[in-house]
Amino acid sequence: MRKLSNILVTGGAGFIGSNFIRYVMKNTDFTGTVINVDNLTYAGNMHSLKDIKSEFGDKRYFFEKADICDKSKIEDIFKKYNIDTVVHFAAESHVDRSITGPEAFIKTNVFGTFTLLEVSRKFWGERHDVLFHHVSTDEVYGSLGDTGFFYEDTPYDPRSPYSASKASSDHLVFSYFHTYHLPVTLSNCSNNYGPYHFPEKLIPLMILNILDEKPLPVYGDGKNIRDWLFVEDHNSAVWAVINNGTTGEKYNIGGENEWENITLVHYLCERMAHFTGKDNDYYKKLITYVKDRPGHDRRYAINCDKLKNQLGWKQSVDFAKGLDKTIQWYLSNSDWINTVKSGEYLKWVENNYTARG
Ligand code: NAD
Ligand code: TYD
Image (cartoon, rainbow, N blue to C red; front, side):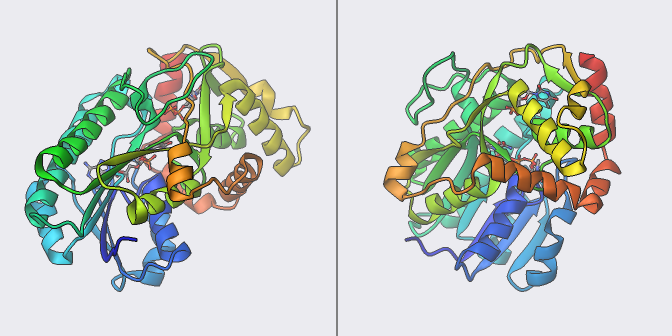
Protein backbone atom coordinates (compact mmCIF):
# COMPACT_ATOMS: atom_id res chain seq x y z
CA MET A 1 0.00 0.00 0.00
CA ARG A 2 1.31 3.41 -1.02
CA LYS A 3 1.80 6.21 1.49
CA LEU A 4 -0.26 9.21 0.33
CA SER A 5 0.10 12.51 2.20
CA ASN A 6 -0.74 15.58 0.13
CA ILE A 7 -3.15 14.77 -2.67
CA LEU A 8 -3.76 17.31 -5.41
CA VAL A 9 -7.21 16.64 -6.86
CA THR A 10 -7.84 18.48 -10.12
CA GLY A 11 -11.47 19.20 -11.06
CA GLY A 12 -12.61 18.67 -7.47
CA ALA A 13 -15.54 21.06 -7.91
CA GLY A 14 -17.03 18.87 -10.65
CA PHE A 15 -19.32 15.87 -10.41
CA ILE A 16 -16.92 12.98 -9.83
CA GLY A 17 -14.12 15.05 -8.26
CA SER A 18 -16.37 16.49 -5.52
CA ASN A 19 -17.72 13.02 -4.75
CA PHE A 20 -14.12 11.73 -4.69
CA ILE A 21 -13.04 14.32 -2.13
CA ARG A 22 -16.06 13.49 0.04
CA TYR A 23 -15.31 9.76 -0.31
CA VAL A 24 -11.65 10.17 0.69
CA MET A 25 -12.38 12.45 3.66
CA LYS A 26 -15.34 10.51 5.01
CA ASN A 27 -15.09 6.88 3.86
CA THR A 28 -11.38 6.05 4.11
CA ASP A 29 -8.70 6.11 6.80
CA PHE A 30 -6.73 8.81 4.95
CA THR A 31 -5.33 11.34 7.41
CA GLY A 32 -3.45 13.66 5.05
CA THR A 33 -4.37 16.74 3.08
CA VAL A 34 -6.47 17.24 -0.05
CA ILE A 35 -5.85 20.24 -2.30
CA ASN A 36 -8.64 20.87 -4.77
CA VAL A 37 -7.46 22.71 -7.91
CA ASP A 38 -10.31 23.84 -10.12
CA ASN A 39 -10.85 26.92 -12.28
CA LEU A 40 -14.65 26.73 -11.86
CA THR A 41 -15.93 26.42 -15.40
CA TYR A 42 -19.71 26.18 -15.89
CA ALA A 43 -19.41 22.59 -14.54
CA GLY A 44 -17.53 23.51 -11.35
CA ASN A 45 -19.70 24.27 -8.33
CA MET A 46 -18.35 25.23 -4.92
CA HIS A 47 -21.71 24.35 -3.38
CA SER A 48 -20.92 20.70 -4.09
CA LEU A 49 -18.27 20.83 -1.33
CA LYS A 50 -19.95 23.03 1.28
CA ASP A 51 -20.03 20.23 3.86
CA ILE A 52 -16.37 19.34 3.27
CA LYS A 53 -15.27 22.96 3.52
CA SER A 54 -17.06 23.49 6.82
CA GLU A 55 -15.75 20.26 8.34
CA PHE A 56 -12.17 20.16 7.00
CA GLY A 57 -11.57 23.59 5.41
CA ASP A 58 -8.07 25.06 5.95
CA LYS A 59 -7.15 22.07 8.13
CA ARG A 60 -7.08 19.07 5.83
CA TYR A 61 -8.95 20.47 2.80
CA PHE A 62 -7.76 23.43 0.73
CA PHE A 63 -9.14 25.00 -2.42
CA GLU A 64 -7.02 26.75 -5.06
CA LYS A 65 -8.76 28.39 -8.01
CA ALA A 66 -6.39 27.72 -10.91
CA ASP A 67 -6.40 26.62 -14.53
CA ILE A 68 -4.44 23.39 -15.03
CA CYS A 69 -2.95 24.97 -18.17
CA ASP A 70 -1.31 27.69 -16.02
CA LYS A 71 2.14 26.21 -15.41
CA SER A 72 3.48 28.76 -12.96
CA LYS A 73 0.36 28.62 -10.77
CA ILE A 74 0.47 24.83 -10.72
CA GLU A 75 4.19 24.92 -9.84
CA ASP A 76 3.43 27.25 -6.93
CA ILE A 77 0.71 24.90 -5.68
CA PHE A 78 3.06 21.89 -5.85
CA LYS A 79 5.62 23.80 -3.75
CA LYS A 80 3.15 25.32 -1.32
CA TYR A 81 1.57 21.96 -0.38
CA ASN A 82 4.49 19.61 -1.14
CA ILE A 83 2.29 17.49 -3.39
CA ASP A 84 3.10 13.75 -3.55
CA THR A 85 0.00 12.46 -5.36
CA VAL A 86 -2.03 13.84 -8.25
CA VAL A 87 -5.53 12.55 -8.99
CA HIS A 88 -6.43 14.20 -12.25
CA PHE A 89 -10.18 14.60 -12.88
CA ALA A 90 -10.26 18.10 -14.41
CA ALA A 91 -11.59 18.02 -17.95
CA GLU A 92 -14.15 19.31 -20.35
CA SER A 93 -16.42 16.30 -20.10
CA HIS A 94 -19.52 16.60 -22.27
CA VAL A 95 -19.59 15.01 -25.74
CA ASP A 96 -22.30 17.35 -27.13
CA ARG A 97 -20.28 20.43 -26.14
CA SER A 98 -17.17 18.92 -27.74
CA ILE A 99 -19.09 18.77 -31.02
CA THR A 100 -20.17 22.42 -30.94
CA GLY A 101 -16.93 23.76 -29.39
CA PRO A 102 -13.95 21.40 -29.50
CA GLU A 103 -11.24 23.95 -28.72
CA ALA A 104 -11.75 24.02 -24.94
CA PHE A 105 -11.43 20.22 -24.94
CA ILE A 106 -8.03 20.32 -26.61
CA LYS A 107 -6.85 23.07 -24.28
CA THR A 108 -7.90 21.53 -20.97
CA ASN A 109 -7.82 17.82 -21.71
CA VAL A 110 -4.64 17.73 -23.79
CA PHE A 111 -2.60 20.82 -22.92
CA GLY A 112 -3.80 20.87 -19.30
CA THR A 113 -2.78 17.23 -18.79
CA PHE A 114 0.56 17.91 -20.45
CA THR A 115 1.13 20.88 -18.10
CA LEU A 116 0.37 18.79 -15.01
CA LEU A 117 2.69 16.05 -16.22
CA GLU A 118 5.51 18.53 -16.84
CA VAL A 119 5.15 20.14 -13.42
CA SER A 120 4.99 16.70 -11.74
CA ARG A 121 8.10 15.49 -13.56
CA LYS A 122 10.11 18.59 -12.69
CA PHE A 123 8.94 18.80 -9.09
CA TRP A 124 9.37 15.09 -8.32
CA GLY A 125 12.59 14.39 -10.23
CA GLU A 126 13.58 10.72 -9.79
CA ARG A 127 11.26 10.05 -6.82
CA HIS A 128 9.44 6.71 -6.77
CA ASP A 129 7.24 7.39 -3.72
CA VAL A 130 4.90 9.67 -5.69
CA LEU A 131 2.02 9.03 -8.09
CA PHE A 132 0.21 10.68 -10.99
CA HIS A 133 -3.21 9.07 -11.44
CA HIS A 134 -5.09 9.97 -14.60
CA VAL A 135 -8.88 9.57 -14.66
CA SER A 136 -10.11 8.63 -18.11
CA THR A 137 -13.10 7.19 -19.89
CA ASP A 138 -14.16 4.04 -21.74
CA GLU A 139 -15.05 6.32 -24.70
CA VAL A 140 -11.40 6.21 -25.85
CA TYR A 141 -12.05 2.65 -27.07
CA GLY A 142 -14.70 3.76 -29.58
CA SER A 143 -18.04 2.09 -30.20
CA LEU A 144 -19.12 -1.54 -29.84
CA GLY A 145 -21.66 -3.51 -31.85
CA ASP A 146 -24.22 -5.80 -30.25
CA THR A 147 -21.61 -8.00 -28.60
CA GLY A 148 -18.14 -7.77 -27.05
CA PHE A 149 -16.48 -5.67 -24.35
CA PHE A 150 -13.71 -3.13 -23.91
CA TYR A 151 -10.59 -4.65 -22.33
CA GLU A 152 -7.47 -2.81 -21.16
CA ASP A 153 -5.70 -3.82 -24.38
CA THR A 154 -8.54 -2.89 -26.74
CA PRO A 155 -7.02 -0.54 -29.34
CA TYR A 156 -7.99 3.12 -29.00
CA ASP A 157 -10.56 4.32 -31.54
CA PRO A 158 -12.00 7.63 -30.26
CA ARG A 159 -14.77 9.12 -32.39
CA SER A 160 -15.77 12.44 -30.78
CA PRO A 161 -13.57 15.46 -30.06
CA TYR A 162 -14.12 14.68 -26.34
CA SER A 163 -12.95 11.07 -26.57
CA ALA A 164 -10.09 12.03 -28.93
CA SER A 165 -8.86 14.61 -26.41
CA LYS A 166 -9.06 12.05 -23.59
CA ALA A 167 -7.26 9.47 -25.73
CA SER A 168 -4.47 12.01 -26.40
CA SER A 169 -4.13 12.66 -22.68
CA ASP A 170 -3.97 8.91 -21.93
CA HIS A 171 -1.12 8.53 -24.45
CA LEU A 172 0.73 11.50 -22.95
CA VAL A 173 0.45 9.99 -19.47
CA PHE A 174 1.99 6.69 -20.57
CA SER A 175 4.65 8.50 -22.59
CA TYR A 176 5.80 10.16 -19.35
CA PHE A 177 6.01 6.73 -17.70
CA HIS A 178 8.09 5.21 -20.47
CA THR A 179 10.25 8.22 -21.27
CA TYR A 180 10.79 9.87 -17.88
CA HIS A 181 9.82 7.00 -15.52
CA LEU A 182 7.16 9.20 -13.94
CA PRO A 183 5.11 6.88 -11.67
CA VAL A 184 1.66 6.87 -13.24
CA THR A 185 -1.56 4.87 -13.12
CA LEU A 186 -4.61 5.29 -15.34
CA SER A 187 -8.25 4.25 -15.15
CA ASN A 188 -10.91 4.12 -17.89
CA CYS A 189 -14.43 4.22 -16.48
CA SER A 190 -17.91 3.79 -17.92
CA ASN A 191 -20.80 6.28 -17.47
CA ASN A 192 -21.25 7.51 -13.91
CA TYR A 193 -24.44 8.67 -12.20
CA GLY A 194 -25.21 10.00 -8.72
CA PRO A 195 -25.53 13.20 -6.65
CA TYR A 196 -23.96 16.51 -7.81
CA HIS A 197 -24.13 15.48 -11.50
CA PHE A 198 -24.39 18.50 -13.80
CA PRO A 199 -27.79 18.31 -15.56
CA GLU A 200 -26.48 18.34 -19.12
CA LYS A 201 -25.83 14.57 -18.90
CA LEU A 202 -28.62 12.06 -19.54
CA ILE A 203 -29.75 11.03 -16.04
CA PRO A 204 -29.76 14.40 -14.20
CA LEU A 205 -31.13 16.19 -17.29
CA MET A 206 -34.07 13.78 -17.39
CA ILE A 207 -34.68 14.13 -13.63
CA LEU A 208 -34.78 17.94 -13.78
CA ASN A 209 -36.89 18.02 -16.95
CA ILE A 210 -39.35 15.58 -15.40
CA LEU A 211 -39.61 17.82 -12.33
CA ASP A 212 -40.34 20.81 -14.59
CA GLU A 213 -42.55 18.66 -16.87
CA LYS A 214 -40.43 19.66 -19.87
CA PRO A 215 -39.75 17.47 -22.95
CA LEU A 216 -37.36 14.56 -22.40
CA PRO A 217 -35.08 14.60 -25.49
CA VAL A 218 -34.06 11.11 -26.58
CA TYR A 219 -31.40 11.15 -29.31
CA GLY A 220 -31.91 9.12 -32.51
CA ASP A 221 -33.76 5.81 -32.05
CA GLY A 222 -32.98 5.70 -28.31
CA LYS A 223 -31.29 2.33 -28.68
CA ASN A 224 -27.74 3.40 -27.86
CA ILE A 225 -26.39 1.51 -24.89
CA ARG A 226 -24.37 2.78 -21.92
CA ASP A 227 -22.90 0.90 -18.94
CA TRP A 228 -23.88 2.80 -15.75
CA LEU A 229 -21.90 2.92 -12.50
CA PHE A 230 -22.72 4.72 -9.24
CA VAL A 231 -20.19 7.51 -8.71
CA GLU A 232 -19.09 6.23 -5.29
CA ASP A 233 -18.15 2.89 -6.87
CA HIS A 234 -16.01 4.75 -9.42
CA ASN A 235 -14.29 6.56 -6.58
CA SER A 236 -13.69 3.45 -4.49
CA ALA A 237 -12.04 1.98 -7.60
CA VAL A 238 -9.82 5.05 -8.07
CA TRP A 239 -8.92 4.83 -4.38
CA ALA A 240 -7.97 1.14 -4.82
CA VAL A 241 -5.80 1.97 -7.83
CA ILE A 242 -3.93 4.87 -6.23
CA ASN A 243 -3.26 2.84 -3.10
CA ASN A 244 -2.44 -0.54 -4.57
CA GLY A 245 -2.29 -0.28 -8.38
CA THR A 246 0.90 -1.05 -10.28
CA THR A 247 2.64 1.94 -11.85
CA GLY A 248 2.60 1.99 -15.63
CA GLU A 249 -0.68 0.04 -15.69
CA LYS A 250 -4.23 0.91 -16.65
CA TYR A 251 -7.44 -0.42 -15.10
CA ASN A 252 -10.93 -0.54 -16.59
CA ILE A 253 -13.77 0.41 -14.23
CA GLY A 254 -17.36 -0.44 -15.13
CA GLY A 255 -20.83 -1.09 -13.85
CA GLU A 256 -21.46 -4.32 -15.77
CA ASN A 257 -24.87 -2.71 -16.08
CA GLU A 258 -25.92 -2.04 -19.68
CA TRP A 259 -29.07 -0.07 -20.48
CA GLU A 260 -30.61 1.08 -23.74
CA ASN A 261 -31.24 4.82 -23.35
CA ILE A 262 -34.97 4.60 -24.03
CA THR A 263 -35.45 1.76 -21.52
CA LEU A 264 -33.58 3.79 -18.93
CA VAL A 265 -35.68 6.90 -19.61
CA HIS A 266 -38.90 4.86 -19.23
CA TYR A 267 -37.62 3.46 -15.94
CA LEU A 268 -36.65 6.95 -14.72
CA CYS A 269 -40.15 8.22 -15.56
CA GLU A 270 -41.63 5.38 -13.49
CA ARG A 271 -39.38 5.98 -10.48
CA MET A 272 -40.02 9.74 -10.62
CA ALA A 273 -43.77 9.01 -10.72
CA HIS A 274 -43.33 6.80 -7.68
CA PHE A 275 -41.58 9.55 -5.70
CA THR A 276 -43.88 12.38 -6.77
CA GLY A 277 -47.09 10.40 -6.31
CA LYS A 278 -48.18 10.38 -9.97
CA ASP A 279 -49.54 7.50 -12.06
CA ASN A 280 -46.83 5.11 -13.26
CA ASP A 281 -46.92 6.31 -16.89
CA TYR A 282 -47.63 9.99 -16.17
CA TYR A 283 -44.22 11.38 -17.22
CA LYS A 284 -43.72 9.14 -20.29
CA LYS A 285 -45.81 11.53 -22.40
CA LEU A 286 -42.87 13.98 -22.12
CA ILE A 287 -40.52 11.67 -24.05
CA THR A 288 -39.57 13.33 -27.35
CA TYR A 289 -37.34 11.75 -29.97
CA VAL A 290 -34.91 14.36 -31.34
CA LYS A 291 -32.18 14.54 -33.98
CA ASP A 292 -29.33 12.15 -33.26
CA ARG A 293 -25.93 13.25 -31.96
CA PRO A 294 -23.42 13.27 -34.87
CA GLY A 295 -21.10 10.26 -34.64
CA HIS A 296 -23.16 8.88 -31.75
CA ASP A 297 -21.32 5.84 -30.31
CA ARG A 298 -23.72 2.90 -30.33
CA ARG A 299 -22.68 0.82 -27.36
CA TYR A 300 -20.18 0.91 -24.50
CA ALA A 301 -19.51 -2.11 -22.28
CA ILE A 302 -16.56 -2.55 -19.97
CA ASN A 303 -14.76 -5.65 -18.84
CA CYS A 304 -13.30 -4.83 -15.41
CA ASP A 305 -12.01 -8.29 -14.40
CA LYS A 306 -8.46 -6.97 -14.02
CA LEU A 307 -9.48 -4.53 -11.29
CA LYS A 308 -11.63 -7.13 -9.58
CA ASN A 309 -9.04 -9.91 -9.70
CA GLN A 310 -5.91 -7.89 -8.98
CA LEU A 311 -7.14 -5.24 -6.55
CA GLY A 312 -10.20 -6.94 -5.05
CA TRP A 313 -12.59 -4.14 -6.05
CA LYS A 314 -16.25 -4.70 -6.80
CA GLN A 315 -19.33 -2.56 -7.36
CA SER A 316 -21.30 -2.12 -4.14
CA VAL A 317 -24.38 -0.18 -5.29
CA ASP A 318 -27.12 -1.98 -7.15
CA PHE A 319 -28.53 0.14 -10.02
CA ALA A 320 -32.14 0.31 -8.78
CA LYS A 321 -30.98 1.44 -5.33
CA GLY A 322 -28.38 3.86 -6.72
CA LEU A 323 -30.93 5.46 -9.04
CA ASP A 324 -33.50 5.85 -6.25
CA LYS A 325 -30.79 7.38 -4.05
CA THR A 326 -29.87 9.77 -6.86
CA ILE A 327 -33.49 10.79 -7.50
CA GLN A 328 -34.07 11.36 -3.77
CA TRP A 329 -30.90 13.47 -3.61
CA TYR A 330 -32.18 15.75 -6.41
CA LEU A 331 -35.62 15.93 -4.79
CA SER A 332 -34.15 17.08 -1.49
CA ASN A 333 -31.40 19.41 -2.75
CA SER A 334 -33.26 22.24 -4.41
CA ASP A 335 -30.58 24.68 -3.13
CA TRP A 336 -27.94 22.93 -5.22
CA ILE A 337 -30.28 22.78 -8.22
CA ASN A 338 -30.95 26.51 -7.88
CA THR A 339 -27.20 27.31 -7.92
CA VAL A 340 -26.96 25.35 -11.17
CA LYS A 341 -30.06 26.93 -12.67
CA SER A 342 -28.78 30.41 -11.87
CA GLY A 343 -25.77 29.76 -14.14
CA GLU A 344 -25.41 28.57 -17.69
CA TYR A 345 -27.65 25.54 -17.36
CA LEU A 346 -30.94 26.88 -18.70
CA LYS A 347 -29.27 28.44 -21.73
CA TRP A 348 -27.63 25.10 -22.53
CA VAL A 349 -30.88 23.14 -22.29
CA GLU A 350 -32.66 25.66 -24.53
CA ASN A 351 -29.88 25.70 -27.15
CA ASN A 352 -29.42 21.96 -27.23
CA TYR A 353 -33.11 21.31 -27.50
CA THR A 354 -33.56 23.89 -30.27
CA ALA A 355 -30.58 22.45 -32.21
CA ARG A 356 -32.04 18.94 -32.08
CA GLY A 357 -35.75 19.71 -32.02
P1 NAD B 1 -17.38 17.63 -14.76
O1 NAD B 1 -17.54 18.32 -16.06
O2 NAD B 1 -18.55 17.49 -13.85
O3 NAD B 1 -16.25 18.38 -13.89
C1 NAD B 1 -15.04 18.83 -14.45
C2 NAD B 1 -14.38 19.77 -13.45
O4 NAD B 1 -13.12 20.18 -14.03
C3 NAD B 1 -15.18 21.05 -13.20
O5 NAD B 1 -15.22 21.33 -11.81
C4 NAD B 1 -14.42 22.13 -13.95
O6 NAD B 1 -14.54 23.42 -13.36
C5 NAD B 1 -13.00 21.59 -13.86
N1 NAD B 1 -12.15 22.10 -14.96
C6 NAD B 1 -12.43 22.11 -16.29
N2 NAD B 1 -11.43 22.70 -16.98
C7 NAD B 1 -10.47 23.04 -16.06
C8 NAD B 1 -9.19 23.66 -16.15
N3 NAD B 1 -8.70 24.07 -17.33
N4 NAD B 1 -8.49 23.86 -15.02
C9 NAD B 1 -8.98 23.47 -13.80
N5 NAD B 1 -10.19 22.87 -13.66
C10 NAD B 1 -10.93 22.67 -14.78
O7 NAD B 1 -16.72 16.23 -15.10
P2 NAD B 1 -16.92 14.81 -14.40
O8 NAD B 1 -18.10 14.15 -14.98
O9 NAD B 1 -16.80 14.98 -12.94
O10 NAD B 1 -15.63 14.04 -14.96
C11 NAD B 1 -14.40 14.07 -14.26
C12 NAD B 1 -13.38 13.22 -15.01
O11 NAD B 1 -13.84 11.88 -15.12
C13 NAD B 1 -13.10 13.71 -16.43
O12 NAD B 1 -11.72 13.59 -16.66
C14 NAD B 1 -13.88 12.75 -17.32
O13 NAD B 1 -13.27 12.60 -18.56
C15 NAD B 1 -13.80 11.47 -16.48
N6 NAD B 1 -14.91 10.52 -16.67
C16 NAD B 1 -16.20 10.94 -16.52
C17 NAD B 1 -17.23 10.01 -16.64
C18 NAD B 1 -18.68 10.42 -16.44
O14 NAD B 1 -19.58 9.60 -16.60
N7 NAD B 1 -18.97 11.65 -16.03
C19 NAD B 1 -16.94 8.68 -16.94
C20 NAD B 1 -15.61 8.30 -17.10
C21 NAD B 1 -14.60 9.23 -16.94
P1 TYD C 1 -24.38 11.48 -21.85
O1 TYD C 1 -24.94 11.52 -20.47
O2 TYD C 1 -24.14 12.78 -22.56
O3 TYD C 1 -23.02 10.63 -21.75
P2 TYD C 1 -22.06 10.06 -22.94
O4 TYD C 1 -22.44 10.65 -24.22
O5 TYD C 1 -20.71 10.50 -22.48
O6 TYD C 1 -22.24 8.57 -22.90
O7 TYD C 1 -25.31 10.60 -22.76
C1 TYD C 1 -25.64 9.27 -22.42
C2 TYD C 1 -26.47 8.69 -23.56
O8 TYD C 1 -27.73 9.37 -23.60
C3 TYD C 1 -25.85 8.91 -24.92
O9 TYD C 1 -26.14 7.77 -25.73
C4 TYD C 1 -26.57 10.13 -25.47
C5 TYD C 1 -27.95 10.03 -24.87
N1 TYD C 1 -28.64 11.29 -24.55
C6 TYD C 1 -29.97 11.49 -24.95
O10 TYD C 1 -30.58 10.62 -25.61
N2 TYD C 1 -30.59 12.65 -24.62
C7 TYD C 1 -29.96 13.64 -23.92
O11 TYD C 1 -30.57 14.71 -23.65
C8 TYD C 1 -28.61 13.42 -23.50
C9 TYD C 1 -27.86 14.48 -22.73
C10 TYD C 1 -28.00 12.22 -23.83
